[in-house]
Length: 76
Image (cartoon, rainbow, N blue to C red; front, side, top):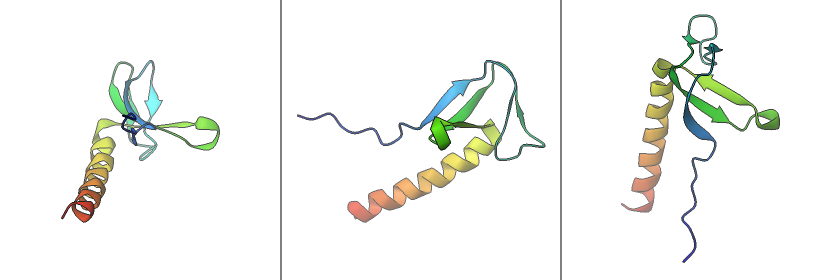
């Protein structure tokens, strides 16, 4: 039987090796060394964008709504 495809290959949770900016709110949010954050890959040349936990929650909440909608559409 073929393996089940992972559709979330470009999204992961990482621990910062150093200080990083939050790409959703560059001027106010910082990701400090050792802090968990959301990393999304796939921009130009495989670039990564980092999001602090506060911003990641909003992003993941939206993704959850979209996935739930797709699931309900396929399996009413």
